[in-house]
Image (cartoon, rainbow, N blue to C red; front, side):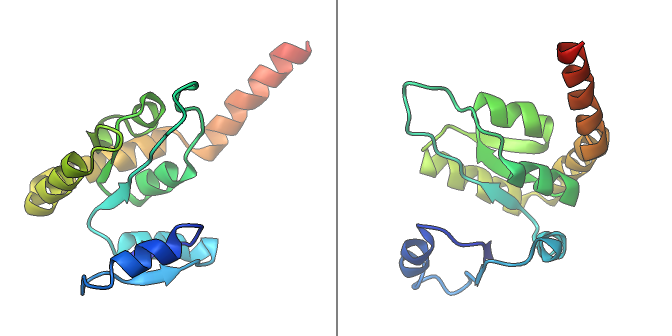
Length: 146
């Protein structure tokens, strides 16, 4: 199940035509995302970063949604991604599609591992609420502006 759209949506959809078990849902309202994530056993975030001049620097909101869903994650092992998902994910080397697929298959075959990672994901989400992050950010602003 692929949710969302973007510049590669049609290309991915075209390349997956021969696979019978892929559903393309397109863009969905934000409030529907938690329900859709709950329908999955495994969530994936195959991030790529082609800029060799800079390290991975953006903050992928998708990971926070995945953690809050309490689902295991397969993603790429960028430093910033690891800082967010910690021990609730399996990490492939960036742009190593074979390793990514191997890790996805490993999770698909191991229900206990999926459950363990899902519990860790939920714990991370509960420890890092938006309210907590907003409070930390506000403290920094107050300190800088003092």
